[in-house]
Amino acid sequence: MVRFIEENITKMFISKSEVLCSRGNDGDTSAATKVLHDFQINDENVVGGGLIRSWVDSMRACSPTHLNSFNNQSCWIEEHPSALNMFEEIVHESEGKQIVMFLDYDGTLSPIVDDPDRAFMSKKMRNTVKKLAMCFPTAIVSGRSREKVYGFVKLTELYYAGSHGMDIKGPEKGSKYQKKNRSLLCQPATEFLPVITEVYKNLVEKTKSIPGAKVENNKFCACVHFRCVDENKWSYLAHLVRSVLKNYPKLMLSQGRKVLEIRPVIEWDKGKALEFLLESLGYTNCTDVFPIYIGDDRTDEDAFKILRDKRQGLGILVSKYAKETNASYSLQEPDEVMDFLERLVEWKQLTCGA
Ligand SMILES: [Mg+2]
Image (cartoon, helix red, strand yellow):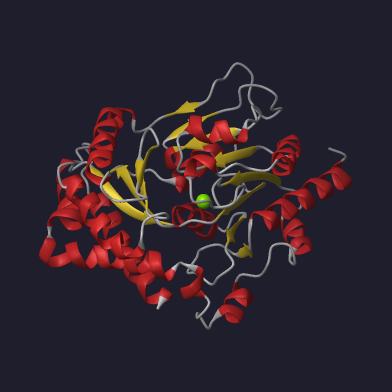
């Protein structure tokens, strides 16, 4: 069931990419944007109700009670073995290459909690990430606004890519990998700031009657959290969100873990952010770099796919349950992520005296 739903949603997203790739060389995206908007939002008869049903079914299917019935768990673990169990193989594969670390935040460094404003990471995890950044260039890649995720992590020596990679900034200080006199900043969706602010306000107004619904402004994108909403109201809430988005042809909707994301229609995602950061670090087209990306969400798949397609480095999905993924390995929860990062630090210190 999970496979069926995710395959169908993936097909929708592949169609979206095809539409976007068809734009002309003059950079005019208006026609492509219109097609995508019609495809995703306006055409009630073709996609509308069906898309909402897919979102809601997929959110339900991702809850643990449903996933427990997924009978391919052992097969999936064979295909995506634990990165802890495969640690020696992973570091062997990275030999002679510069490891670069990319870490999602929610569900990867912090546990998923009901109130997204209280998704704190533990002090122990913060210390681990701090040590990690002394050994390898390290970036946090999150759907949250850059400022908000920095407020949780509080480490100045990291790269931060907020708003699904649409807001990237280099370390303020303390990173030996930051090139001198070069301040790094990438904001490919700046023109969308006013419209995101406006749609955020409209979503707050439209959803205020639904108990538990929470709208979050993530600067270059926004999202509506379903986690604390009665499951019986999920379809109605999704319809409300979609009704607001009908008025914004340059925005698109996508679905995450009990959340609907509202993003600008631009060709930028966590995968593009990964490529941009590797390029900024001087590793464009390098064969001696080994990126490791760890994340738990559908939006992290864009980065996993880049690594898989390039056959460079590896992706690690954080999940207790079988899921369709482009990641090569798995870890079950943030505690296992911390163990894996600790082992990487110890290995680096032992082998290279970092
Ligand atoms: Mg996450």
